[in-house]
Image (cartoon, rainbow, N blue to C red):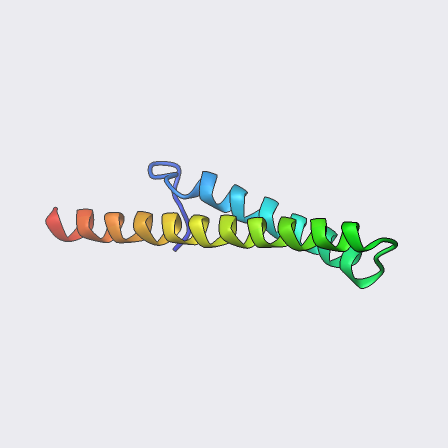
Length: 75
């Protein structure tokens, strides 16, 4: 579902997803060619955190969709 200007509920969650995806891409590059073991460890932690953000944002988006569906059914 595409958000409308009347119901822009999911935009912050989408922004968080895009930021997390960018972090994952950047950290993956660090892991592929790590210069030091500590950089690889830091990259793994950053990836874990970004994945958690993706999951939270996805839940927020799904909740927004369910809320909209419930509102449509109720009206």
